[in-house]
Amino acid sequence: MSDDLENYELVSIYRLNPDDQERLLLTQRECVFNWCTKDEWPVGVIMSYIWRKGRVWLTAGAHRHRISAVRRNPKVSVVITSTGTELGPSKTITIKGRCVVHEDRETKDWFYPDFARALRPEEDAAKAFEQMLDSPLRIVLEVIPEKYITYDGVKMWAHTEGSLDPSELAEPLESDTVRLRREIQRRNL
Image (cartoon, rainbow, N blue to C red; front, side, top):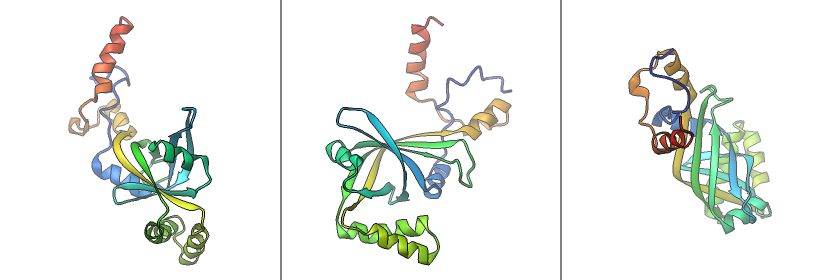
């Protein structure tokens, strides 16, 4: 075990490096899409997505509650895990962003084929999926990232074992410096 670890309270030092973050965003196909209801309850559903142009792109029927919610309040979050991918478990990304609802033909014309091929790689299956997506009530959601919260559990385990190169550790974030100290003081620890 690493000599400099006392517990796992300080986890912001285990952030994904930029290459792994991009790889995870491009590799995974499912996320949890979160929004707030009219009565301010946070809600999330698992949705398929693609990562293009530095944005998360999703689709849903215009009649879904989440669509009226994001039209009212575009503040959303998207949570992505590496579980089930070639990257293995224990890597996550949470994106805090603003959601734009697209109903224009230009967006649908590039999005539906790209989305269909990403989820159904076989050409015939992708074409059939694309045709089903292109319906009058379907819209496209674009999440524009404002903040990323990432975590790499592989780094934490390597650090615990004493095998992580210290250069792989990130600088701790405010939550693990100011807020952690404040909580320790509040509890008289």
